[in-house]
Amino acid sequence: MTGAMFGKTKGKNRAGGAPLWIGFVAFRYTFRKKGRSHASSALPVLGIAVGVLALTVIIAVMNGFQLGFIETILEVSSYHIRVDDFPADRTDVMERIGKLDGVSALTPYREVKGILRRDAMKPELAVMRGLPPDALSTDGGFAEKIEVERGAFDLAGADVILLGAEAAARLSARIGDKVEFVSFADILPAIGDGGGENRAFILAGIFRTGFYEYDSRWALVNLDAAAAFSNPDVFTLGIKLKNRWNLDASLERITAILDEAGLTGNGDAARARVSTWRDYNKAFFGALRTEKLMMFVLVGLIFIVVALNIFQGQRRIVLEKREEIGLLRSVGASEFQVRCAFAFNGVILGLAGAVAGMIPALLISTHIKQFFTLIETLVNFVLNALAAVTGADGGDFSVFSPAVFYIKEIPSRIIPSEVALIFLFGFLSAAWAAWAASKKVSGVKPAEVLRYE
Image (cartoon, rainbow, N blue to C red):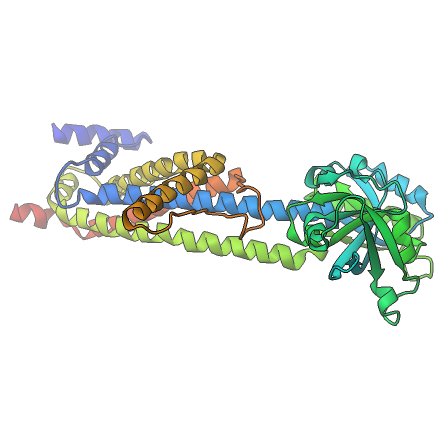
C-alpha cells in the first residue's frame, strides 16, 4: 500500500504536481504529542510570536514619536522647500509658484534670534518668527500642528506677540502682559546686518506644538513687525507640497520659475537660494533613521535565537526519525522530498508564530494608550498591595510620566510595509532554519538503516 502511494506520487511528480505525503509528514512532526522533541514545536512558535509582538509594538511606538517630531518640524518650522532671501516685492513670482499643481501652501516668513524679557524676570533666549496674519487659514498643516492654549492666534496687529507655552511659563507671562524682544543684532551689532532694535509687544496668545524646542523658544509676530529686526527687502518663502516625497519634480518647476524671474545666479539682484527639507534636516532625520535601524537589529536578535532553536530542534528530529527517513527513501522518496517535509515543518512553525504574534501586536499598537494604562494599573496595584503589607508608601508608577517626558499621550503609528517586513522576517527565519537543518537527511543511508532494523 505504501509502495502504491509512492507510485502515485511519482506519477504525479512527472506531471508537475506536488506529493501530498510531504504535508502529512510535516504536520505529523509538528503536532506530535509526545517524545523528547515535543518542546521543539511549542518553543519556536512562542519565540517567534514574542519577537513579532515585541518588534511590531516597539516600532509602532517609535514611529509615533519619530513621525510626530518630523511632521511637526516640517509643518511648523522648516517647510518642504525653502527659498531664502526672496525679494519682498516679487509677488508675481509668489503667485506663479502658488499655482503649481504640487504646491499646497505658500508662506513668507522672517526669522530673528534674540532674547525675551518681562519686567524683572530672567531673560530667555528666543527665536522670533514673523508670519502673515492669515498663516493659520492658508496653511492647513501648520494649523493642525499648533494648538492655542490661551488667548487667540491673532497676528493682525503690529504690536502683538504669541509665545510658546514653556516660554510663557518661564517668563510668568499672561495674556495682555508686555513682553520685550531684544535682537542679537542690537546686542552685538558687529555680527548683525543692521536694523536691530528693542521693542515691546503685547502677549495675545500662548501656543503649544508638542515639540519642546518650539514651545520653549519660539515667539510669533506679524511679518511686517519682524522686518524691523532684519532686512525688510527680503524674506524666506516657505513652500508646502501635497506630497513631500515627490520632491524632485516640484523642486525642478520652482527652480525654473525663479530662473525665469532672474532671482538665481550670481548677479546682485539674483540672490535667492533654494533648499529642501532633506538638506536642512539631514543630520536630525539621519539620526532618527539610524536609531530605528538599530532598534530593528537589536529586537531582531530574538528571531536569530529562535532560528537557532529551530535548527537544533530539526537536527534532533532527523536523528530521532532515521528509521522513518530510511523507510521513506527505500519506498521511492527522494532526498529533496524528505528535506521538503522537514522544511515544511519549519514553515508551519514560522507561520503559526508570526500569526500568533502579529494579531495581538496590531491590537496593542492600535490601542496603545489603553495598553499602557492597563500596565500602569497592574503595577500600581501590586505596589500598593506590597505597601499595605510592609507599611511602605504606595506606588505611583507611570510608563511615560509627563513629569519626565514632554508628551501628553503615547503616540503609535503603524506602517503597513514595516509590519509586512516583520511578519516575513519571523516567518522566513523559521523556514530557513528548518531547511538548513534538513541537510542532515543526506547523511541517512536507507540500506544501512534498514540493515540494523
